[in-house]
Length: 196
Length: 419
Image (cartoon, rainbow over all chains, first blue to last red; front, side, top):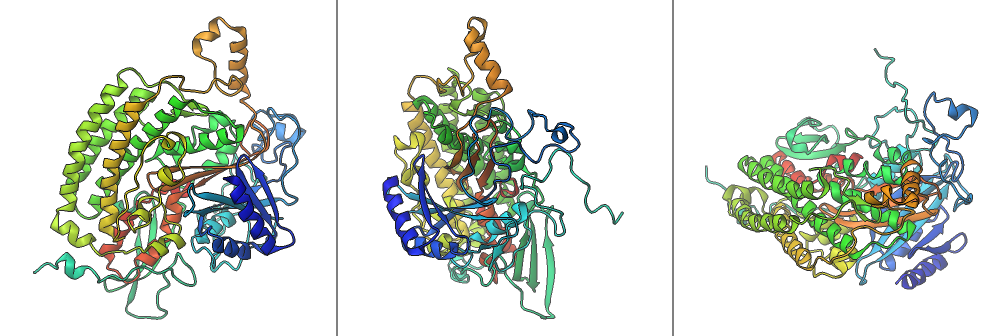
C-alpha cells in the first residue's frame, strides 16, 4: 500500500526536480519540497490522482526536542533555566532528536486519492523560516483558502499568491501569532485596552 | 396566495460554482445604490453557535457574502501542547462539542499511530459503537436545530428527547453524559457494563421507530419540501474543489465514506454501504442525515451482535495505566502508575495523521511529536472550517431565507471550526 504511494511520490518528486525528497514513516509517505514549488507539486499530485486536499497543518519547530521556549508568563523557572514540569518538551525527553527539516516552520498538506481502494494518502511538506512566504495553492485547491489563512493567523506563515490573506480567527491588529512556540501562554497581555 | 410547487421551484437555483478570485467570499457589485449590508450573527439562533455572516442584499437577494469566524477560538490546539499526552485527551472533545467522542478518538488514534501501539479488537469495536452513537447524537441535534431554522419548532423537542437516550448510553459506559474522555490511548477507559447490550438494543429499537417518524415529519412536509428542494445545489466537482466530505459530499452523488473506502478499526470487519443521494440540494442534505441515522442503527446492531470478548485496552504498561486492583499488591504496577500519572509517557518523534469518519465528514488529527511526553503540535482537520468556505458560493443570488436553509443543511459547528 505505502509502496504504491511511495512510487507516486517519487514520480511527483521527479517532476519537481531539485529539492524534493521522499521519506516514509509508520506507513505514511512524506514528500518534502521547496516552498516555491508547492503549487506545481500539488498540480502534479492532482494529475496523479491525488485530487483532494484534506488538511493543511502548520508546525513551529523552534526549540524542537529541547527546552521549550514559550513557558508561562512570569514563572521564575523560565528565567533561570530550571526544568519545569509544565514546560513543553521538558519531561521525559530521551535522546535528543534532530528536527526533520532545516527551517523553523513546516506546512504539511494532506492529499487524498479517493479512487484507489483503499484510498491513498500523501503528505507534501514545505519548510520556511520566519517571514519567508510559502507559495499559495488556492489556485489548485480552492479549499486551501481558509486553511492558509488559519496558518497565517495562528502561525504567521505568509502565503504568496493567496487572494486575501487576512487573519481568520483573531481580530485584525492582533499582536503576534499564538501558535508559535515563542508566544507565551498562561498569562495573556491585555490587548485593545488603550481605547478605554 | 398560491404556493409554488417544489417542481416549479426546482431549477430556480443553478449549481454552485467556485467563486473567483477568493473562493470563500462573494464579492458584491461595487457602488450599487440598491444594496444594503446585513449582519447575521454572531448571536443569531440560526448561525449554529457564534458565526457571523456579513451579507450584502439587493432586496431579499444575497449578492455579497463573507464569513467572520473566530468567536469561539479558545486555543485548544495550543493548550494541548502544554499537557502530557494523556491529559491532552480532555481538550479534544471540547472542540466539536456535538461530536465529542469522535474528536477524542481521532486524537488517541494519532498518538497510537506514533507509538505503533496495537489496540485490542474489543476496544476497536467499542470505539466504533460509540462513534456511531456519536453520529446519532450529532444528527439528532442537526435535525432539531435545522428544523428550527426552517420554522419548525416541534422536531427539536422530539430530537432532544432521543438525544438524551443516546447520552444515557454514554453515561452508562463512561460515567459522564458529554465529554466523557471515554476513548483512551490504547483502547477505551472502561469496559461497557453488563447492562449496556440490553440498554443499547432498547435505544436502537426506540430510535428505529422515531427515525421513521422524523423522515415523515420533514420528508412529507409540503412547506419543508418547498423550502429545500432544488436549493443550494452542490455538484460533485464543486464538492471536490471545496473539500466537502461526509454527508455533504454524499448528498451530491460522491461515493466517498472513510468507513467503507479507507476503513480503520472495526470498520475493516463490518459491512458499511455508503449512502449516496444524487440531487445535492438542501433537501438531500437533510434526508441523507436521516438515512445515515438508520444506517448507524444497523451498524450498532452489527457491532452489538459481534462484539468480541477480551481486553478493552492495550496491555502496554509503559503507556496504559495498570488495573486499579494491582496497585495494592504489585510494587511494579504502583511505579508504573506513578510514572504515568506524573510524567506521562514518551512518544517517539515524528509526524502522523489519523482520521475518522466523523458526523460532519473527515475528522483528522495531524500530530507532531519531538520524543517527549507532551505533543509538540496537534492540529485538527476540522470539517466545519472547510465546509463554511462554500457558503458564499452556494448563496450566490439566493433569497435571504434560503441562506439560512443552506447554512443549516451544511451542519457546521463553530466549536469545531474555531477550536
